[in-house]
Length: 237
Length: 263
Image 1 (cartoon, rainbow over the protein chains, first blue to last red):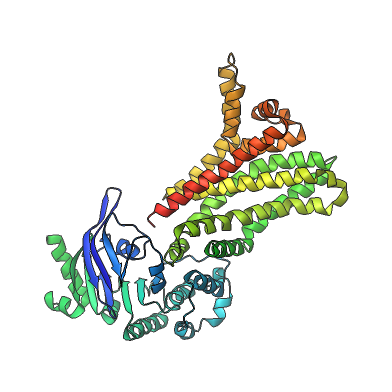
Image 2: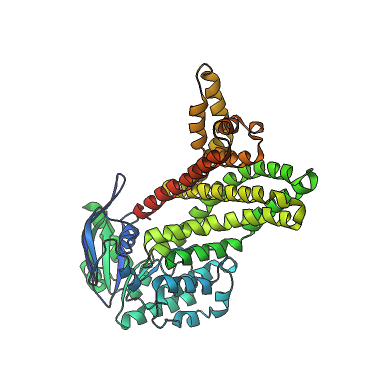
């Protein structure tokens, strides 16, 4: 689904991505993990064209990411936090994104129902709680049935019930053959969701493989321990 | 094109409902209404209103604009992740901020004059020019606000830069010009001063307005020189064109910065 080759990026003196190579398989959930500052956010933003790399290439399905914007019609991006325009309602935001995406496909309104958000969508965003805004963020990501979902800390700020509904939704779109790339600091959550794990250290992929193999390789029983073991190993190297 | 208009439309809708914009509109309403009541005639009221506009519009536009662009940062990222071109998005965001500010200013000033009706019909042309100059200043300082918010990562520093830019153009500039004139008192200074007027959008707007009042000498040294050298329509056309460039160039630079930026 995604093929990243030799991706390199500097922010001033900071070398954030160092000739990173990564392949992400279709119809699977891939978790991107790694210590703070490993380049996770920069990698995700590169997929969306928010960050332009210095060298290397990204191919998503059959399109090379190089300035043409139409490939993004197939991507749903859920940023960690969004501050929506205060005086617009959820419905207006949905209408705006529908127009910008030129989307005519049937909408995925399952999350709106799951979150019972219908009535809140008519109110201005400024009156909504932080959790409700985050639900709106999730709804907008799934609404247009994108083939690729890019989720940055998707459950941050959600209560346990909403969080588990969102996780169910992630697994069900994966089941429907769509691809999910996500980051999270909550290892138990990744353990529940992820098929594959890409482990980033210092702007490189230190490990990529199935969750099962990672645990096996580090002889740990859960992901948190396995990742901690990888980080220790990374520091020793 | 429709993408630009859509983004503009949502920006306008968001701002028109904001309390800040209401306060801004009411401020100009109160200023125009008050000055009309307490001035002997409409022309004097407009003259005082000119000073208010030249002082307040650049300040509010650049500070509010900078804060607004910073606040919209995350939403802008979400919009950038949609299949839209950056250039269209930038134009939409820019117009979505500049247009409501200009509308607030225009409505706030025009309504009191309209309510006072025929008595001030003679001032309609001057009022229109004042609204136009205010809108032009809004366009200039909104563009500068975008430039600052896009280039300066730290928000607090960005607001500081915005206030600094305003202080320079609205307060210190005339003093600097006077200082230069005093220093080079032995030399003919009219052409350099004219050039300095062209380099400051606030002075340009002032020149444009004062050429209508025939009172240029009353308001600042630069205004007086401008009128002496370029009275009448030549001056108006030159000032208008220069003001147009003051909108076009920062917008073009902002567009370029926005297209190349890493978010």
